[in-house]
Length: 197
Image 1 (cartoon, rainbow, N blue to C red):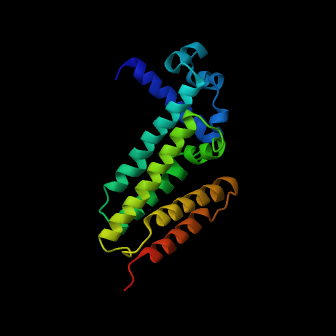
Image 2 (cartoon, rainbow, N blue to C red):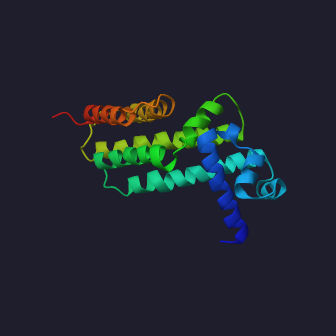
Image 3 (cartoon, one colour):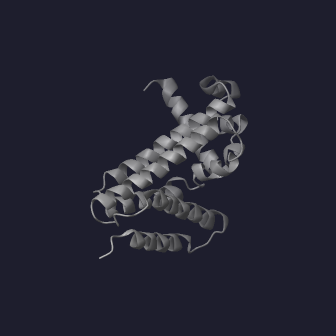
């Protein structure tokens, strides 16, 4: 890796930490330059504009999400175990890896009605995530762990809803039972999805 690429990666990692805590609205060139010890012009030389910086922050966050949540989940044996692994990895991501809050959840609120390249990238990332949730549930259906008539898109929607609920309860409400309640709700969802005997 070249020195320029390493510097850019370090800038993006710092920007992810800021965005996790303060949202994209809190990510400014001035604060990022101060945190990285770079000049504003030096920082801009790597990205060219704030829009490009924001987009690359989202892309790098998505790469980290794949590395931390998706790949380990897909490495788990198929079926219900894989569904559970993906969910557990997401909870770890939301509570430990992104201690300031999940960038995707925060950005969904910031950019829900703001058209542009960043919103489009965010929508694409969310669609990919929902598709993955449906796919791993489909593997559980194929392996006989879940009911063959399970509506995969509905299942993915409900899992995603639990994740959003967890973020709200843990971040905004500081509910000490957020994780317990989320896991209990997920177990109930899994129970409903299982094949009837």
